[in-house]
Amino acid sequence: MVDFQPKDRYSMDDLLEIMRLLRSPEGCPWDREQDHKSIRSNFLEETHEALEAIEREDPELLKEELGDVLMQVVFHTCIEEEQNSFDFGDVVDGVCRKLVVRHPHVFASAQADDAEQVLKNWDAIKRETKGDASQTDLLRSLPRSLPALMRAAKVQTRAKRVGFDWPNVDGAMQALESETAELREAMAGGDADAVEEELGDLLFSVVNVSRFLHTDAEQALTGATDKFIRRFAVVERLAGEQGLDMTSASAEQLDKLWNQAKQEERQPQTGTEPTT
Image (cartoon, rainbow, N blue to C red; front, side, top):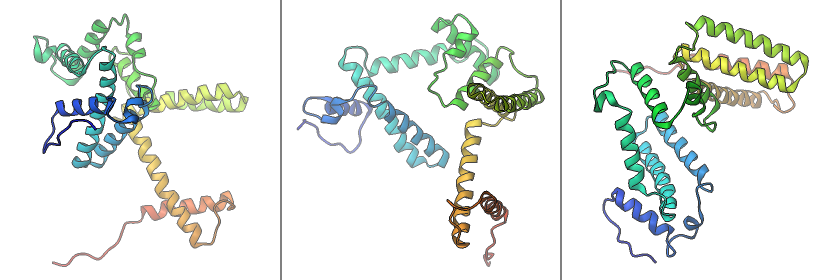
């Protein structure tokens, strides 16, 4: 048993000490066994849960989930501290230095009158400090582990900052139509590799259109998936009411139920008006 006294309110130093105790020989067997790779998925999961709290606009839940994300940062830092590589102070020092260097319009004499100029300055400083030799290096620096739609949007946005972009949405829409035709050709040819490549090009074009429409492709797809689930639930209910087994129903029957579900969703909800 470790020597630890509970408090009414804890600080950042307490969190660091708690993690060190958990990793100590007298601490938790599970925590001691972990390394960066074994808890990698935990980091990702906690990040997504924080994003879900933001989506729900729930401050209390967000406070909790941000704490879980912070705990993951401390966990990984503690692992490195044990190897005498770096500690939490080094992490904080590094990010503070980065913020100061990349905001010369705040902490130095550079000018940035709008957000677009801020981003251009940021990219230029990032290339200089990271030793990126070209704009291509800046695109390649985006991690491949990002969600594919998000990575595509970020690549396109960075390319746009050096003028490599369609002048307006019409060009993006023409590219989308062209990629759709090329996908059909690949499908007709029966080449699986070509189909995958053309499908990727089509998705990349969809993200391009979303940028011009000032719509987040990742969020738009999430909304579409949620809508599908809602309508699927209605289809399942309607099938039950009509005595249909969805697994054996015909495509025509399911399509009819789907259209019913869409119609039901569009109908305004009625209710009794409150009296005054």
